[in-house]
Length: 58
Image 1 (tube, rainbow, N blue to C red):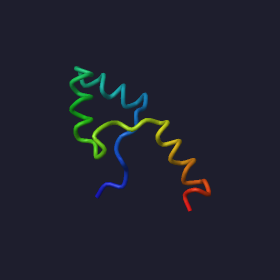
Image 2: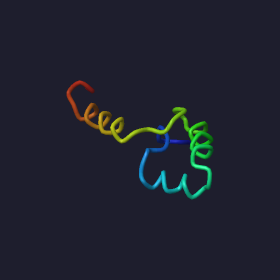
Image 3: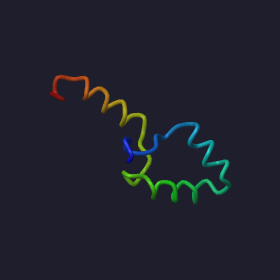
Image 4: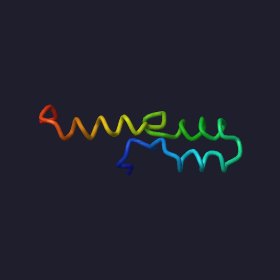
C-alpha cells in the first residue's frame, strides 16, 4: 500500500535519473509509474501544507 502521491522533484531525483544513462527516457518511464502520472513539485507540497494548516481545511 502506498501512502504518498508519488515522487517529489528534487536534486537527488535528477542525480539518480542522470546516473541511469538516458535521462529523458528514464524520466518518462519513471513518470509513467507514478500514482499521479507525473513527478510532484515542491511548490505543490508547500501549497498543500499551507492549505492543511489553514482554517479553510476544516
